[in-house]
Length: 427
Image (cartoon, rainbow, N blue to C red):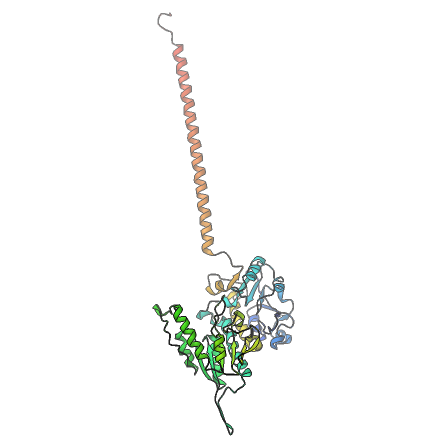
C-alpha cells in the first residue's frame, strides 16, 4: 500500500460476546469523508449500539467488505479468525491488549499487519482527545455506580418521609483515576455519602473537588522530588490492616485499581467483606485482571457473608451508544494524525503518539538503521583497505621479484663479460 494512495477505512462488526460497541459512528463518518477518506462499513456493524446501516450511508459511507480496507477499525482485540482476514500491509486500530496478548501481537507482526493499540497511546496533553482508555473508563465508572445501586437493597440518597428518615448509603471508591472519579461523581449525584481512596495522596484534592471525602490511612509515603517512595513490608501490612478496617464502615465499595500488564492488586480482603453490613455490595472493575477483591470471580456475581460481589468484564459495552461515540472521536483524532490534507497515509514515526501506539509492523528504528549503515560502511572500508593492502603487498613482492631478476641478469652479464676478456700472454 503506497503512502500516496487515498485511504479506505473499514468499520467491522464486533463478534466477541457482549461487545455492543462500534469503532466509528455516522456523524464522524461525515467528518472523515470530508478529509478525502472512503469509509466502508460492514453490514450491521453499528446495530448493537443502535446505529443503523442507513445512518452510515446517509453520512457518506458504503456498506461492504470492511475487512479488505486499507485501514481496519475495531473496538475489541481481533479473534484468531478475524486476524486471519487481515492481509500484509493493512493497518489495524483498536484495543489490542499488547501487554496481555503477546502471542496475538506476534501473529499480527508475522502477518505483516501494522497495528496501533489505542491503549498504548502516550497519555500526554496533545493526545488527550485520542485517549480511549479514559473515555471508556469514564463510562465504566458511571455504570459501576448504577450496578451497585441496583444490587443494594437500600436507597442511595437520604430520604425524609412520614414513616421516618432513611440515611444515605455510604460509598467508598478505591482508586481515583478516571473511572474512580466518575464513580464518585455519579454516586454523589444519586445522593450517596461518598469517600475516595488512592495510594497517591496528591489526588486527594481531585477527590474533594467533586464533593467527596478523601480516606486518609495515616501512612506517609512521600519521597524525594515529589515522588512517592516504596512502602516497607511493615508499612504495607499496616496500610492493608487500616484499609480493611475502613471498608467495614461502607455499604458499597467500588474498586478500580489496575496495573497494566500485571495482575490487579488485592485491596478488599475476605476479612473486609465479612465485616461489611449485610446486603452490602462490592463492584470490582478489575475483574478482567484478576480482581481487587479476594473473593472476586471474574464475570460473575457471587454472594459471600451476605455481601454481593459483582465483577463485570466489559461495563462500557453495556452503554454502547455513548461509549461508541466517545471511542469514535478518539479513533478519528488518531486517524487524522496519520493522514495528510489530501487523505493520503502519512505516518510519522518521529511523532511519539504514532510511535507509541504502534505495537506491530513497526519500521526499523532510525538509530538502528543508522548504526547498521555505519557498520556496513565500516566493513566496506575495512574490506577496501584490506584489498588495497593485499594489492600493495603483491605489488611490492612483484617489484622485489623484478629487482631480483634484474640483479641476477646483471650478475650473469657481468660474469659473461669478464669471461670474454683475454688473459695476459694469450696474444
